[in-house]
Image (cartoon, rainbow, N blue to C red; front, top):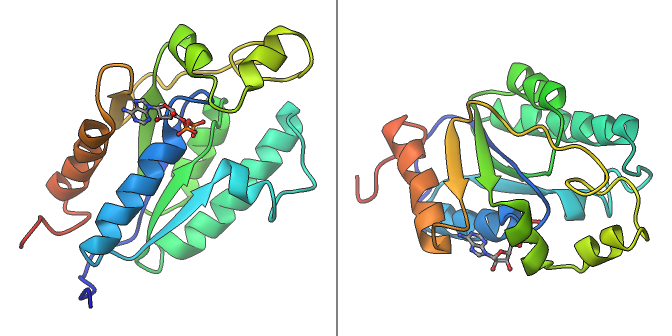
Length: 184
Ligand code: ADP
């Protein structure tokens, strides 16, 4: 059985284009943190949109409502010493600034790869549909993405492997005393 370790609450807020690697990194990060006894909860855009925010679409207003509700959940968890791993495109700077104000120990993580790369990955086939005009309000194609100017962590997934990407984030959490160092 894994022993739970003491750590403060925090919110790792991963922002980036669809296909940049947010969900893939969040899953592996969550697995590694739990194995160390860190209390984590994962909030993912696609999952949240099937439940908590299933009534919302992708207009600017609905995107704001989506993030607003998620922020409320992240706020409750983080103030109770849970590490919350969030993966949301969250394209607008103002909404990300709102998250930072609301939650405990917010860490902004830019999961980044050039549009050509994420488009060639086209994990869920959305880019092809957006280019064909079959999908409106698709971030990066026919909707804006305001890239973070000074993220706390910048992960280039076209340059780093999944393991390296996760290690970079874990190292940040350790250095900033948000989780105990391995084997501590
Ligand atoms: P998002 O959640 O940002 O929409 P996904 O995690 O669903 O993106 O998809 C990212 C894709 O990129 C996956 O197919 C994954 O295997 C690939 N990938 C390549 N390099 C990396 C990396 N360093 N980190 C995360 N994903 C990567």
